[in-house]
Amino acid sequence: MQRTLPLLAMTCFLVACTPGKDQDSAAGLYPTVSYLDIKLDNNRHLPANPYILEFKNGKKQIVFCGVEHLTNDSDISNPLFTTIEKEFFEVTPNIAINEGGDISGKVYASKQEAISRDGEIGLTKILCDSLKIHTVNGDPAVATEFAELLKRYSKGELLAYIVTERLMWGLKGQDITDNEEIAQKYSDFIQQYIIKQGRVALGKEEQSFDFYRSQYERLLKRPFSLAELEPTNPFKPKEKFQEIGRASKEIRDQFLLKTIDRLLDSNNTVFVVFGGWHLLACRPGLEEIIRRPRP
Image (cartoon, rainbow, N blue to C red; front, side):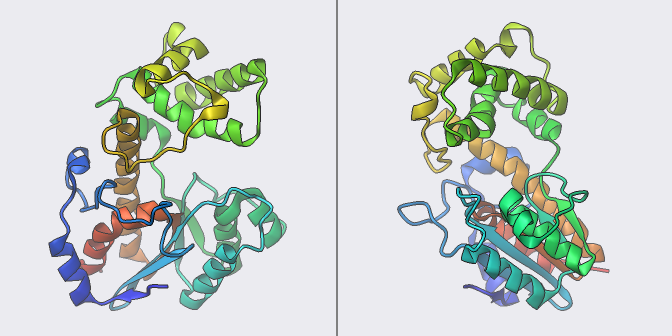
């Protein structure tokens, strides 16, 4: 497991790293690595799970636990969780950043319940509760992300990607095959997530499942089939579907880096638990952030 990066090494890495062409929309707020340039093994795995990097400068420290999300919710004894917990208590952070929304109000009866319900997100919350420190959502508001995506893509393209990534994958995992049930869950998702949370104005036709399916098939050039959905792969350079996925991740990366930067002003140790691809993409931004003078 990699640990602290000395300032000299960080500086050399930062000079050597330049954003890839997928970074154009990020406006250069923080330097990041293009998802097309991230180096993973043939199965797109991280070097370890979790993959932990620590960035230090004097009293200030960022500890980033990059994770590969588990697919089995019952695997509560996975080493992923014990490693995160061990790192957490070794560094005793002042504040933590989680992926997946605002969990500050969640309460769990035990660590086992937290992990079985919400995986590493639940674990982060109950660990923070044990030290009486706050958790902060590292993701932007859905409406913010969608507004940025709609500057580059049509509503149909947005729906083709977001519905597939954030609804259909979950339904496939639940082995749902009833068309009426799929259509109802789709309708609820459009009303509650896309329109209410995302503030995307959709006409009646644009809200229909047939519209989503037509946009999916146009974008991916294959018939829609829940059973035959393929994994999202942001490392494919030529597919527009994956391009939209990269753009979404870049928006989230910039927000995460801004959140870390802000919290480091008033906290000595910031503990981050987030998807590992984000760690690899954000590494030069984290190195820049830790080098900045602080109050």
